[in-house]
Image 1 (cartoon, rainbow, N blue to C red):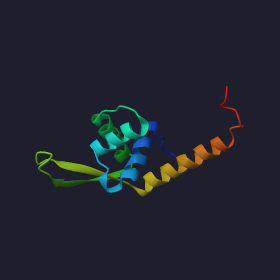
Image 2 (cartoon, rainbow, N blue to C red):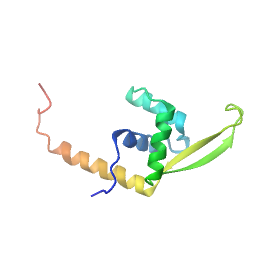
Image 3 (cartoon, one colour):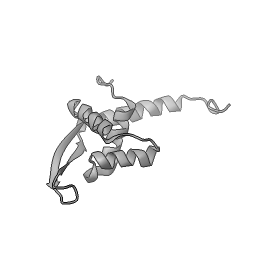
Image 4 (cartoon, helix red, strand yellow):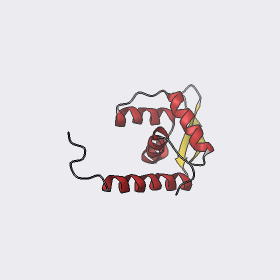
Length: 109
């Protein structure tokens, strides 16, 4: 049983960090949430969530090089940690167990 709870947004952002791999930085994560979930979210909300995930030990970050397109600013890239991978696997298994117990046609009106 896991000892640290993560919320739905934290789960979504962890999954997107895994999906994006080497391109996982704030703006790209935000765009992917909007694209995949048709959900508006601010870059600052994504950064706050990434900070929480980092404090929990589920992501690490590193700075990329400065670019002219960004006015010389650098991007902070994120990668999932082994602990982050474990928590996602635990969530996936728990959801699968729950879904497997939903009776057929239980969700139809």
